[in-house]
Length: 476
Image (tube, rainbow, N blue to C red):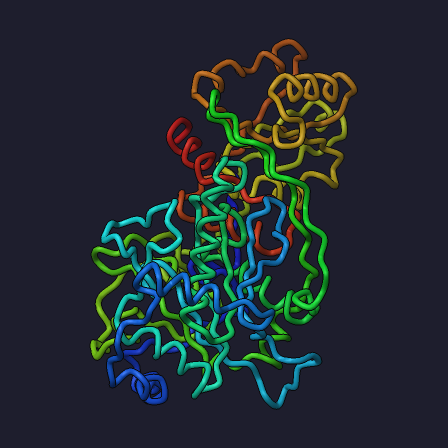
């Protein structure tokens, strides 16, 4: 029997319907809106002192007052993966005034604002001065966004190298010192949003943007927040990551209402180099702009005269590709074949029923159980809640011996041989009927659903992409 799972309501490249991407720079309307942004980019300027070690150190040392230095809030998130730095006083006073909605100039960091001064692809991890601005006029153009156009400057960056528990705390402290030097060169007040884990904060997910609004509206930047416990040490002998302590919990905010009342998306934009073009390492920046609902520019479009949109392609599952297919699927029966009923007609038959669910993480197995089986008295078990295979086997036997119908969520193994160990010995021993429900979901959709539910407050933790990859490698 094959159970049909329905797709979630939006893609990881568009994340949720609450955020609709604005027109790209190739649109006439967007070109008109760029007029203001280009006014400060016409005249190149001399290189800033930050391009030499003496100048950078002097700039950093001069930023000594509470209003001209970069300070970091305690780390946020279940994985201690959301870092927020504040330079100066960028946030407006509370309560916010709906008549003067906030507008933002948002920038990616590496490859957009700065590149390694060393000329290498990746910056030197032990050198807090290994950076230079991408173009000579980049610095002034960013400054003018705040000084002339009144936009809040925000830097949004993924820094997966510093994943919590990886034993790279020293490298992270050097990186933060470098960020302080970049801030000293920028001079204008700004906010730095950093995602170091593979969770809801990492672009193209919008967790960092939600964190920005949570900090602003709850005045967390003005409070003396407690520090989370120390990070466990990395074990170099086993090369295993330690589990990072849980960071501070961000107060929830009604982001849709907030953005409608207090944020001017039409006058805001995001600049990033991960745009899905040929040669780009990723497309997450273009996706993130669409998810947040602001205009997107590549560094070339924003900082130079090359305004023409280059061809690009977004990876992953997208609703636009599957709209007609989704309509067709919605007209199909819940399961097929339909020659046998989903639920046995008598309680006796249900108590003799063992159902195995087979499908990747994010296929809809748990939701199917809750909607269609739970009310009929079926129990269910999965390795996520019971931790290991043996515990799941014991739970299966216990429930069947007690005369309870049972829905068994398929266990994702490290290797295919582990699945072969779980042949229907349980049913043979207990003499029960066994049915198998297969959730036929393509990999991009499974990855999207996994990210969507983790980012939507549905009480799910995001399953790693590696776990999904293993499923399709061994079981598909």
